[in-house]
Structure formats: structure tokens, C-alpha cells
Length: 232
Ligand SMILES: *Cc1c(COP(=O)(O)O)cnc(C)c1O
Image (cartoon, rainbow, N blue to C red; front, side):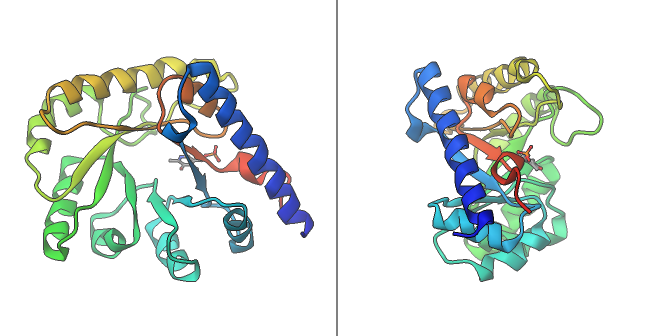
């Protein structure tokens, strides 16, 4: 192993132990939580190292970088798009990804549904919610999402599987807890209004707050910098 590989192995093991411990505290099965390795700032060599360690879910924030990387890596990886998707990138992106976390408007959802119909695909998506209301953040306001919900249920091809949010950055992960709890409660309200469509996924938690997110019900945690600490 190179020093880069052993550093990544150490980081990956530490993060996985933290995931395990958080699941235990919350009385949840570890199989309920998927660790998405966010590789937007990672070099290909680092991505390869994670693959060797058994990582299967990788998140990229730019459709362009995602498209460049998919052909370079083995089939069987589940790719997650976690950043903004421009409408003109939908066609190229749909065939590459397992899950889009970052659908932030009805307009984009409509576009995805139309392209999915043409391509005869059933893409899985999450709706991004700006729970904290920060101006710099993307996503639906909780109110707007509740207002548009019936319209969203009418889309035929796209499968809305849950919600995603980012908490405001803070050194204290406890500050993120109310944001995560609110996303879960919003998910529960929307689920109760949608016969048959269970919103199973909650994508919440990043390097600095993922253990709190797991305690609040995250099913997908998106972790970048913790995996690459001390690397490069
Ligand atoms: C970069 C990014 C992450 C990972 O953040 P880290 O703090 O590096 O773990 C998670 N989610 C989104 C949407 C991101 O853009």
C-alpha cells in the first residue's frame, strides 16, 4: 500500500466505525444507512483506493465530472449526483446515475420526467429542501414543497424516493439536529399525503454532522473531506 492508500483506509475505517456507533445509539440497523463517498475533490487514485476498500456508492456534485469518471471505473458502482443539475445536462446524466439527490424545482422534475419517458427509464430522485432558509442554499422551501406535492405525484416516470438537505455549516453538529428532524417530519407529512409512494430516503449529513443525521433518521450520508483527511 502507498501512504495515500493507507491513509484513506484508516479514514474509511474510522468513518465506518462512527456510522456503526451512531446506528447503535439510535437503535437502527446499519443496513439502513448508506455511506456515499463524495469524490468531487478527490483524485482518481483516491477513488480507486476507496473502491479497493469495498466502497460502492460514490457522489459527485458536477454532472460534467461525473460523466468523465463513470467510464473510467468499473460497472457496478452506484453513482449519486449531489449537486445542481442543469436542464440541458439531464439527457446525458440520467443513464449514468443511480440516484439524483438534488432536484430543486418542479421545472427540473418535469424535464427529468420527459427525458425519462423518451429514454424509457424510471430515474430515482430526491427533492432537495432548503430547511434552514439560508439564501446561499438550493432547494424547495418546506412550504413550497408541501404546496406543490399533488402536482409532483402526477409525474409518471420519475420516482421520487425521498428528500435531501444540507444543514448550515457549524463547528457544533448539534446545531444541525433541528434541521434534520424537520426534514424527517416533512417527509412523514408528505408520505401521509401520498397513497402508495413511500418516501424512504433521507439524504442528510456530511463530514461534520453525519452522526447526528443518522440519529435523526438519515438513510444516506454524503461524506467527502473526512475520507480524505491527511491525503494529498
Ligand atoms: C461536498 C458535499 C458533501 C460532502 O461534504 P464534506 O463536508 O466534504 O463531507 C455533501 N453533500 C454535498 C451536497 C456536497 O456538495
